[in-house]
Length: 334
View 1: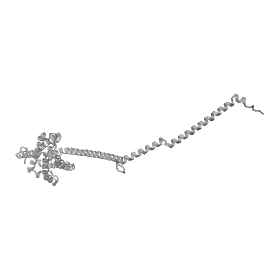
View 2 (view 1 turned 135 degrees about the horizontal axis):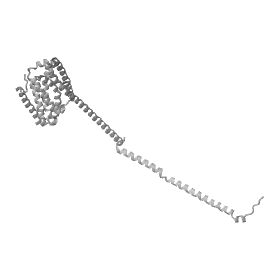
View 3 (view 1 turned 120 degrees about the horizontal axis):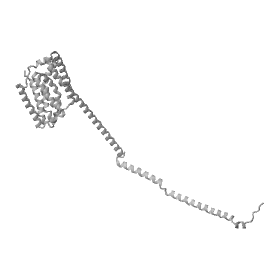
View 4 (view 1 turned 60 degrees about the horizontal axis):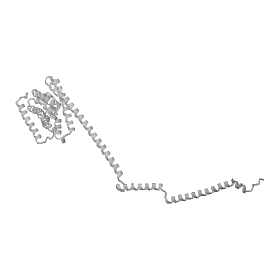
């Protein structure tokens, strides 16, 4: 059994893994298949997660087949070397992802998900090799399935499927991980010395997965709200545009087809209205003649009345004069 990272098989596997990862990344980078920093950051992750996920399938099958019995599972793979080689392959990825990434995609290596996560896993895997727990680690590499989907969607955005990632994350990093913790707890109760450390190791990473899944849900809710706001804004814009178009059509179109007909009708109505106003304000020729005749008649009547008035005044003055009394006979009084 291999129980040291300095074992020749582990060193050989590490060198071979380094050559594979460096060649893989160089091919993607030099041929411009990785066009952006984000794509370069997930090139090695794509290779690592695909290999480890496929390697976990027979172990997951065996673990589920025996009902999650850790003692039986450990006994079946105690003398197998290939889980150690796959574990070394993954450890090499963690190391190169930090070293190459610091130069080629430094902005994508975050403190928590990059440095802390990778260094913690390196120390844990060194401990797993020394304890002979590599078979358990490779079985838990089924949790790399959502990582593979994430890397595939990051390298080529047309392959991104958030619902597939969420489903794989829920099935592996939440449900299956919780199942293994429960089975480890049962095994630790029966044999604390042998399985207590496995229970602690499995339980330590579970809260991190729950935190990541919660963050993913929040992200999806935020993206859904943003998408809905864009749809509402686009709908309002189209509604306003359609309303303005209808207003323009009402003004410019008529049954006689076009703007000219509407303009002609407006001019005709304006002329008609103007003519009516002129007819109301300016009198006709017959009206003027009638007014002249009435004025002449009034002047003649005024002249006649003036003459009669003068005669009456003269008569009155004569009667009251002294000559009238001298020439007229006296009036007898009976």
